[in-house]
Amino acid sequence: MFALKQKQYNDRIVPVLCTICDYDDVFWSLSPYQVIDFTQDFEAGCSALLRIWGIGYRPTDPAA
Image (cartoon, rainbow, N blue to C red; front, side, top):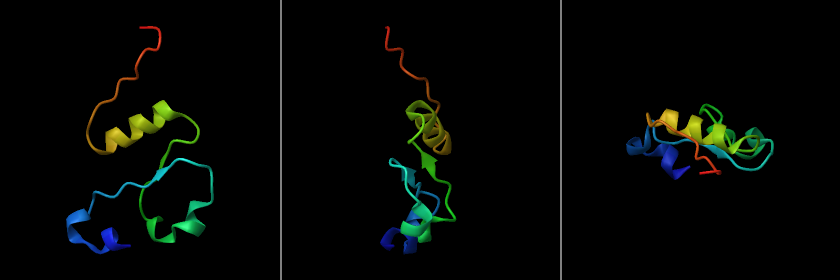
């Protein structure tokens, strides 16, 4: 709640979902924000998070 009230954090708060839950019930104050979901696919979560920050993401090749 502190960060949500601070102007310096405008457009810098990105909720990240690491565990499956009903986050609207727990974090109702974050509902206006896009939630980045890491629960289904870690690579897709990384890509979505970095896209918000304007950073490209290339998954690592475990065979390399």
